[in-house]
Length: 229
Image 1 (cartoon, rainbow, N blue to C red):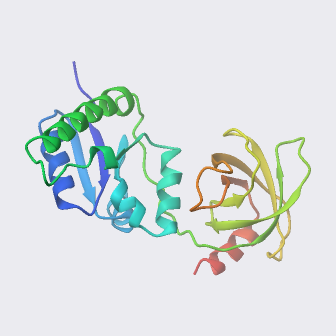
Image 2 (image 1 turned 90 degrees about the vertical axis):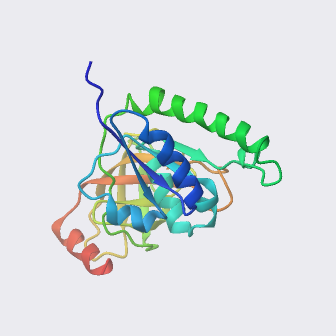
C-alpha cells in the first residue's frame, strides 16, 4: 500500500516546540514538517507547495498582530489545524520528570489523532498568499437571495475577495452581492461566502464573513490594484 505524502506546516517561534514536533514526525513515513516562526515567514515559504494541515502554537498566535490572527483564522476554514500549547498541557519547568512527560505523552496522542483522522482525509492544497490590505470600504451588502441590503464595511480586501463585517450567520456557498461605494464603478460585485466568524466568537476581532469574488468588472479590479499598492 502506497502512503500518500503529507506536508504539514508548523507555526511557532519556540525552538523547543519545533524540535519536539520535528523529532516526532521525522519517524513517520511520507510526512514533511515545515516550521515557520510566523505567518509572514509562512507566506514566503509556502509558494507552489500543497499542504494537508497546519499546527499552530497558541503562544505564538496570541502574541501575533491582529492581521496575522485573521490570516490563521481564514486558513482554519480551509485546512485542518491543530492548536498546541494550551495552559493545561504546558510542560512544568519545576517537574520535568513528571508534568513534562505526561504533557508530551498527551501531545503525542493528539498529534496521532490529528494526522490519521484529519490530515489523511484532507486533499492537499496551496495556501492563498495574495496581497491583502486592511481597507474599510463603505459597502452595501446583500447576503443571500432573500435578504435586504444593509450598510457595512470591508475590513480587508484583495483582488480576489474580502472580509465583510456582519452579524449575519450564513453557510459557506451562500451568494453575496457587494456594492462598494468608494469605487467609481459601483456595479454590484457577485461573491460567495467561503468562511464566517460569528458574533460573540471572541473580543479580539470583528464578526463577519470572508468572501471570494465571482464576478467583478475590469475597472473594479484595476481600482483595487491601485488601492493595494
